[in-house]
Length: 194
Image 1 (cartoon, rainbow, N blue to C red):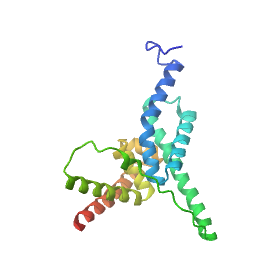
Image 2: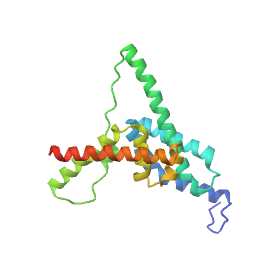
Image 3: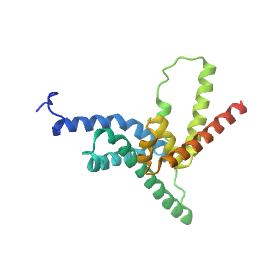
Image 4: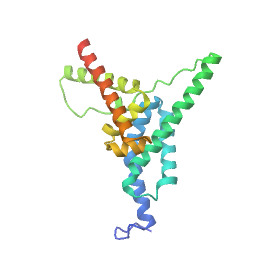
């Protein structure tokens, strides 16, 4: 049965279209966040898919205006769990002297086309700055990285970020301040090196 735009907002079909639209809207950003936090494309994809399944099973009946922070709470929880599992795996590797090779796949952020036509020297400077910023973001402690990405990349407000990170608004502000300070220091240090 085709979806009728005149149906009421309580209609299950209407809810399904709304939920699908929401998931499509957050999927790409969530994947980028997971890749940045985890560093592995396959693991990041698994985390995003798992986060979506958990979100749908637990929160699909919640009001739509609560979906974004709730989804990012699930995503950040899955990222944190992945970090914990990686720590345990790495301990075993060290104990048993396992040397697994890391996947060296291309970063999806580097694959995006540049929409601005700039002079070659500006392109080089911008790509160097972007590389420094990406490296600095990756080197941030996980909670600072989460606060920065949720506030400035996803555009959540402080309250929504606190919900997504399962912490107080004060903690969000502290993590965010430290992240900005660290990133600013990296970018300024990069300018002085040129």
